[in-house]
Image 1: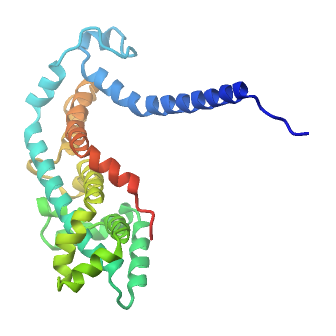
Image 2: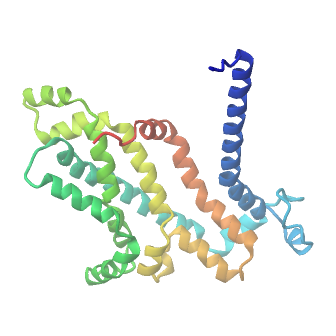
Image 3: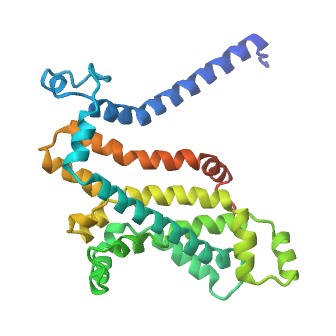
Length: 285
C-alpha cells in the first residue's frame, strides 16, 4: 500500500529539515567565530577584571585600549608589520606569476612527459614542510640567505598547490578562445598574458588570498631562519610578547588581533573575486 503524504506534512518536514540545517550552520559559525570574539574580549579587558576572576565573561566590564597601546609601545610592532607586509606582498606576487607560468603549459600545451610532471607535482603536495625544513635550511645557509627577506620569500615563491589550482582554472577556459588567438599569430607568452590571465582573474584572486594567509601566518620558517629581531615578522613579534610580559593573555590577545587585521582587510577587499573563484573551483581536469 502506497502512503501519500499530505501537503501540510511535507511542509512541516521541509521546515524541520531547514531548521536542522540552520541550527548546524549556527553551531559551526559559533565554533568558528567564538574564538575570535573571545580573543577580542580578552584584549579589551583591564587588569582588575583578570585579578577579580571575571575572565570567563565574554564582554569586558570596562573595555580599554590600554593593552594595544602597551603592546605597540613596548615592542617594535610597526617594524614587524612592515617586514610581514614586504614578505607577503613579494611572495604573493611571485607565487601568482610563477605558478601561472608553470600551470599554463601543463593545462594547454602537449609535450612529452607532461603527465609525469603533473604526477610529480601532486606527489610534492603530500610532503609536509617539516620533512623539507632541514635541507631547505641548509640550502638557505649555503646561499647566504640567513636573516634575509629573500630567504623568507623563496619557499613561498612558487607552490605546488598554486600550480595545481591555476592548471585547473586554465583547463576551464574554452579551447576556441585560444585557437582564435593562435590563428591571429599571437605567441604563447602573449596569449598567456593578454588572454588567459584575464580569464582566470577570480582564480588568481582566490590564490592570492590563500597565499597571503599562508605567508602572513607562517611562524615556523621565520623562527628557523631568523635570529635578528630587525627582520622578525609579525607572528614572531607576537611570540615575543609571551616572554616579555610573562604570558599576560591580554597583551598577547591584543598582539594577535593586530596581526589578524591585515588578513581581514585583504579578504574584505577581495571577497567578490574570492567567492567567485571558490564557486568555480578547480573541479575540471
